[in-house]
Amino acid sequence: MRIPSLSVQGSSALFSLIVLSLAGSLGVSSSQAQEAATIGDPNRVVNILQEPRHRLMHQDGDIKVLDVQINPGDMTLQHTHDAAIMYTFISSGSGPSGGRLSSNTDYVTENFTHQVSNEGPGLFRIIALTNYGPPMAALNTDRPTGLTGEPEIENLWFRAYRVTLQPGESTAMQMHHNPSIVVQVGEGLTHVTREDGITAELTAMGSWTWRNAHSTYQVRNAGTTPVEVVINEARRSM
Image 1 (tube, helix red, strand yellow):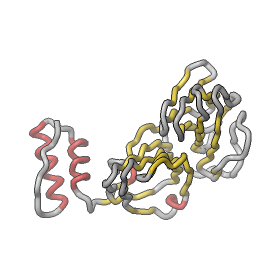
Image 2: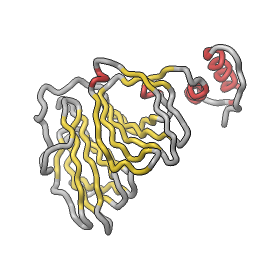
Image 3: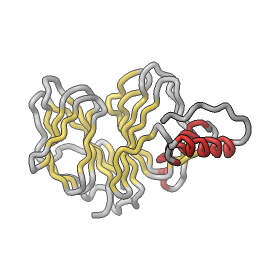
Image 4: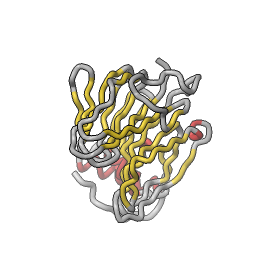
């Protein structure tokens, strides 16, 4: 049930209290009501995991996948980054971002609070990988087997590869010691097939699939045009 909009003057705490009280009479859960109160208070500072536009899609212990989507004309709440994070940029307000990769590990020792807005006209979207675990001891240990070329990003928390496949082309079977996420960063059709034959199908820009640590899998272009994917690892002790 949708909570009716309110016009309330006074403190943000009062606003939250009224929303929570109203939620009880409407049969809305406290978590839903709290999210509504948070959205209604633009001055509140929240952790990145509580920011409504940073949607938690998958969690594996200290590692989390966030699908960040900001509609045209919208702005996030003030939110605090407190962990190492790697971004796969899917689109900005002005169009596709080509799967540009970046990583910030400074947030571990110096938390950072900000807001992000999208002037449009299109959707702003990022697939983000956060790693709340400790850093690895060495830079280039635990690399996967079966992937050629150097990683595009490699630090003590993350590693990322970019792969372009022609129609019908496949990677070799690759084994990742760390949990990994395969993200399709352009249009096309990609099959990510485990060694037991179970296949995940990526059908659009921003489609992704998760693979557990010590997984063996192959990435294949199942479409009729070239396809590009990034394979991102969250590094952690085995």
